Image (cartoon, rainbow, N blue to C red; front, side, top):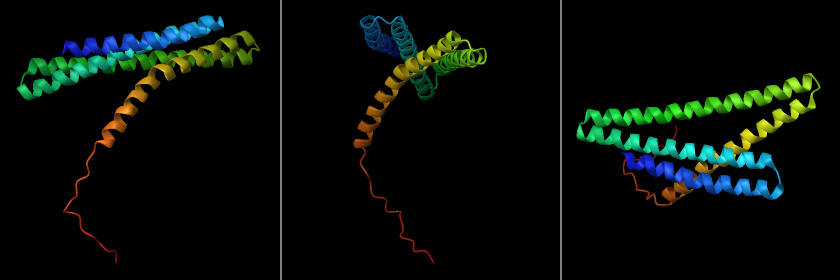
Length: 169
């Protein structure tokens, strides 16, 4: 369902611009190009997260619709979307891992060679990776947490007549 993909991308773009823009403004006010760089990274990561969530939602809808209607074309389209979302997520993890690896490597080699500029560069890259991940992924966790709390509050407990009181021997 293309609507869900578009909605996910739109939500990601709006959220990315708000979060990334806020961080960029902080960078501008402090005169820090590094903080502005983090803002750009947050915006890109959040947009990508929105696209992926939209693709996953669309795939889930299409797959369920295909199963219910016994429509193999719809089922295949849903599976393709879900596969694409998983693939995009895996690629993002690999890129992040490379970034963290390179930052860590720069720090270790810099310390070994007593090259403090390289140590600083490595630390800067690790901090940027952590900040972007925390801001972009943390937002999804916060939203998910709020939804989980709301759904938990609306749960109605039902008594189970099939429960027996068992006394240990």
